Length: 635
Ligand SMILES: Cc1cc2nc3c(=O)[nH]c(=O)nc-3n(C[C@H](O)[C@H](O)[C@H](O)COP(=O)(O)OP(=O)(O)OC[C@H]3O[C@@H](n4cnc5c(N)ncnc54)[C@H](O)[C@@H]3O)c2cc1C
Image 1 (tube, protein in one colour):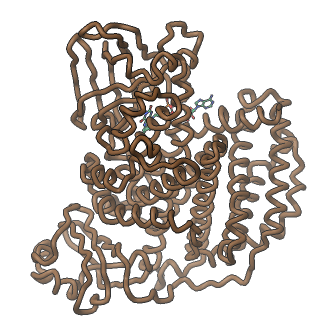
Image 2 (cartoon, rainbow, N blue to C red):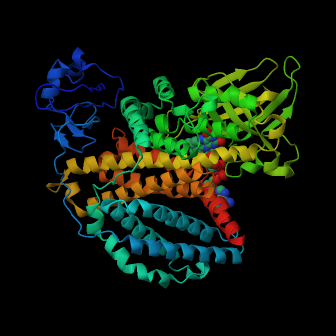
Image 3 (cartoon, protein in one colour):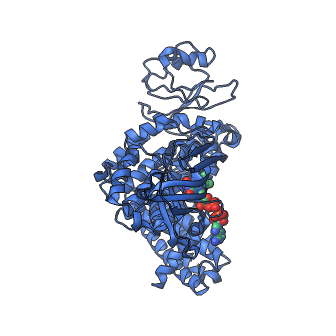
């Protein structure tokens, strides 16, 4: 079975009104339909693709963007039953869907706002109880739960403005607020004494929750994703990245995942061409950022669209260069900015991040890799690096590693003894690499096979006497001991981007589930007709939009130089939510959800990593969110 992408308008037959693409996951080749290859690939379903489009009686097609089912049959054969998806728009209006429920509930934003204010005050009280009990480290379960509740409350709070923009937006806001209260109560009940709050404070929310958690209400939201309300400029960003993701990333995503292959070079080149790597590079260094909200919003929107197509070969590509960009902008010398930022913006230099070590992941401050001053081959000033880094994603393809090393031998200085280096390296083979340097330096990379998030590959890298010039210490002499802070500056935005990555994965999962539900008949009806399916889809749609709107809100805050804490909150909330959304999307597919040939199985395993990297969920909740909430309350 081959792959094909056909994106020209049909001019005859039943599909004559559509411009569409058919994706065949087993082979990402773009096939020219005029060559008749499709017919051969299908073993005799017509010899000319133009005709075969009309006669594809054994292919099962759904129109993605409009959700219009165009069911012509099913492929069967060597690869079993499979799904073919139209990824471009249909020109005819979408017909009404199988989903039927209409809720009569109207939004009640005033009550939502009151409930959110009550929840906030309860979190503040709980933080006082946490402080009184000795803080997050002594009361981990309480601190973790408070952090997650606080993140959900902040998400609801950020939705209030959105909710005021229309009825659908208001209903999404009310549904999310009710969901937040339900989660709050389930964490609180039985532990009220630890929390130091009276659960009856939430009893006034009962009728609200009853209305907006009602199955009929959630079911009515199953196809109501809600508008994004992006300004025109950002709509353009979204269209550009969605179009690129649909045309270049999505057709390759399944193949790379199934065969554990590398990120295709055309994805990197294409992203460079549309400016993806320069979104946060200031214009004076040949990037596209003019600072402020635009920089963060563009990056969030682009990341979501790319992740919707693939987390592994799309949405995560811009995160690493961005982390290095932020560190350079914050702490690099002028010469370093001029040297590296234009190259990062154009993708001439691709970066990997080498922070984690086998014994130090969450506890970065303890890491052991050392950088010691030593002259280079011609006696020039520089540093010799020794140590082992792990989980260095993209480490083979990257031209440089952003590497955190201990420059102060006094380990009692913990994070204050760390500095950040740009370590140039040759391009390596994805399946493992070994490089040597004149003077005896050695760098050896071993790939770590993973259940998902494939394409970029993560490596354990052993580094022995690898020499870098003085100019590659970020900030040069001024950067000594500041590596931890510079890396954290990059990671703050990395967390926001990871939330955007999660939104993209969730959006893809929701779409896959909604499509499948309309086309799978069980007990004589499409499963989309059943209340349970509709309620799941409704909750998914609500969570996806709430997560998206919160990520926009955090982007706006970061554009003003604020929002570090909210970036951790959005990461914690959204990444965990992505696990539920992808789980239910897979579940809606029944057995086929567990089959590799359905993309939803990839989304499920990909989503699982989101709560681990860029700050493991527990560490983020305990050491960042709960700690900061306590610190702020103590001020
Ligand atoms: C696919 C993938 C890609 C990655 N890419 C990169 C990369 O490019 N560059 C890079 O530097 N790193 C990368 N990482 C590493 C990632 O950042 C770490 O895995 C993460 O920081 C957690 O560290 P760890 O794996 O050592 O877990 P540990 O720190 O060993 O933690 C194990 C578990 O214990 C929990 N835990 C930790 N401390 C506490 C505590 N005090 N109380 C209670 N629970 C606690 C953690 O939350 C976690 O659940 C990647 C990881 C993965 C899986």
